[in-house]
Image (cartoon, rainbow, N blue to C red; front, side, top):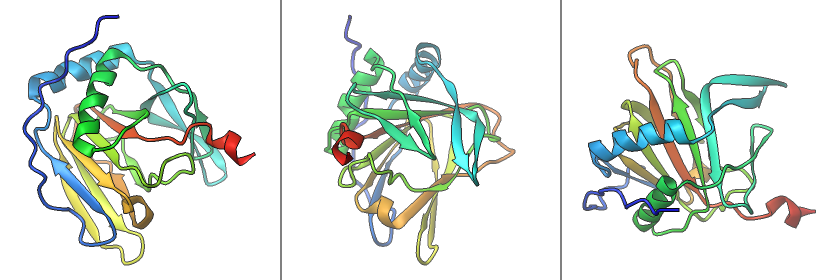
Length: 213
């Protein structure tokens, strides 16, 4: 298989921690060029198998309008909201992007969860990425493609809230122990009418369920 060339990535300035305490999160606007962002979004929409997300909430299963794709190494499984995800294999575009986001985050990843938001009516409520399969010491690196959406972080104890717009081609890296102390959300809005894809690169502890038995 022909290896896809790496994407054009802007020089990185580390910047200021967005969080006032109990963790660290760094935002990198225009991390990827607008041309590459648009092309990548089109490729992902066509190349991956997108499915409605199924969540276990308030004692019943709920099917979301938002679509998801879970891509990972064969050794990785992932369960959230009571539903086990079966991974798709890596495609060249995602492998190329993984190499570059690993350099930014200074960490290795073995999985990527992608969310397709059709417009502002699709969102994600307050949650932490702290499932048992995830390596709690690893950062989570997020890349945004398409529509600019408001992203918020909220401290679990005192409800301090930090919000920022996640722009097309931007990257956000949340370092440990952010997930332990903070929740985050992409709240719904009636003002956004174009789609967005969000990619979150993560590190799964392989065969986690087998180790527990």
